[in-house]
Image 1: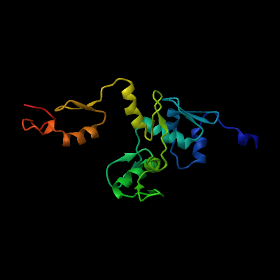
Image 2: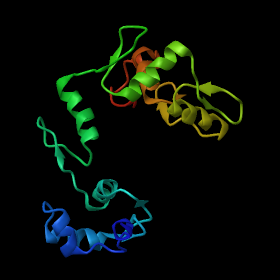
Image 3: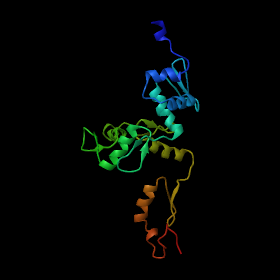
Image 4: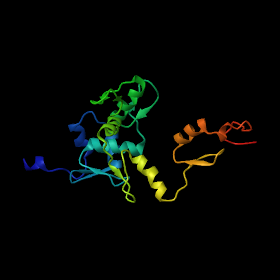
Length: 193
């Protein structure tokens, strides 16, 4: 029984083939070249990633090798994880399996339902360390932080010189900007003749 509990410090290719007939010698040799196995841990030789599970290491190695074994049946897209493929396929099928229990909204991804629920609960987990303002979404906090850092808003209405922090706000503004309706305007990106 003691011999059964002892783990080898390195995978022996020939003995591993007896245990797992579905693996080829070439794939086990390749695995050994990418991963060291010691004390029950698989360590990536290309970075600092360590795990006790071989399947987790195989998933991790795809980041280095660029492998995308999960292919979309509707388009040429490929993914390193089946879960990512499942999310992608919903863009083709229109499936929205995550439904709000408080209203009729439904979502293709669970994370979007989580964000939506904050509109009902009022939860705002992201706070500004400078002025203690709270936000429901992280990107809103990032945009807000620019005001404290003295950054000039990146989007500018050329006809009236009004700055905007977000592109969508500039686009909305351009449709009603009176300076933008000047007949001398070229119609190209707010440039004038």
